[in-house]
Image (tube, rainbow, N blue to C red; front, side):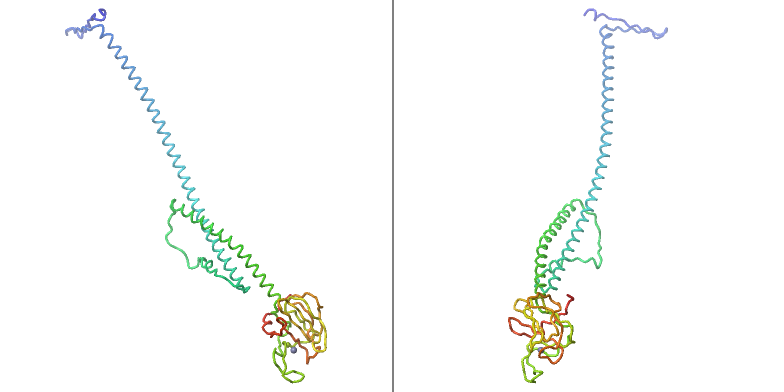
Length: 326
Ligand SMILES: [Zn+2]
């Protein structure tokens, strides 16, 4: 300690004319000053190093942040673009759903027409028909961009449309099957019901009912319809059926009888020739013989009779239709 308390004298001689300055400094100060200066220098260096490192990290982070922000923006742009595309797809899907709904309504309408054509009793399908939207008359108005939140409910609505269509189709298929069955039934009924002229000629020479007998001139009951024509003209089966009679006798001449089922039969008389035999299956419009003048007849004609449950009925209501080519 004694060594430390020893003092030095610092002598400064500025100029020859000026007085000499003397400073007495203790040895402790002499050692402390450079040590403190050195410590301060180390501290400053440490600060500098720390600061420059932080600055580097900060700038690095800033760079990362900038590039991340750019990336996010890019992703955001891509997502926005995707959302736009999805919204466009959604609009297309919705339009397709609407088009499908319209087509469904058209199918329903066609089915209704089909039923009407076939004479099947129809139930209301006007609900389906009323869904028909026409683009005639123009469209317009302000077009606004679709908000993202709005597109969610729009998507839900479109999905609902599709499930509605699926539901309608599920209903329509058995409905059409039923209509098909009914149409087939009507067709079958038409085939076995006498509806056509049995001749090409439309010249009715004598009606059904009470008339003057052409031979005796007395009032008699005429059980059929007489249609005039030329010998050899074709005679057609009035409906599908089975031949129950094919013979010749003095009164009826060459005559054929066909059983059409459901209690309905037709009979053709005074024919020139017969093409069918008992037991033959005939179809509507098939030629079963030739028009003639055989039996009790005053000239070439077909005497045509219709029976319902064994009773003669007026054939006139049964010959409304034109013959289709068999
Ligand atoms: Zn007659």
